[in-house]
Amino acid sequence: MEMTAAHEQRETLHEDVLYPEHVQRTESEEFRRNKRVLIRKLDLPCWVSGSREKREVHHIFEWSLWPSLDPERVLDALHAFDPYGFTARDPETPITSPDDIRNLLVLSEKFHRGIGTGVHKISFPIWLPQRAVKPGVEITCDPGGHTAKAAPKKAA
Image (cartoon, rainbow, N blue to C red; front, side, top):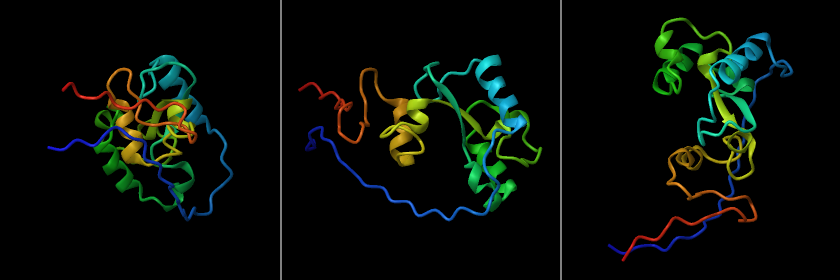
């Protein structure tokens, strides 16, 4: 089988999102409470890297899209993507808020909002594999290509 050499491929992702009318975002008491549980009480690391540096809390289902989402379908999807087991422990209670702990994920600043690495900045098929890269390997880079490390070559 012919091998393709390690290389950088630059993509431009354009999103045209129709955000519904929604109130101005503020941290709700529910969000603050759940953030404290995730970061202080449970001391969960970044879901991607395992780091405990610069942790933030991400809404799996985007906060500003909540008015357009069907809570039953959100709950159904969170049964499939349940990184901390909260949905399995509370499988039937309806989700009435995007700040529900079942809809939250701890990420470092880099993998939350980082240019070239953050869930808000790159496509899911590229963001998710960052969790599974081999030690010492990076599969993403900043827009200038400054942090990329190509995958190691296979031994001949």
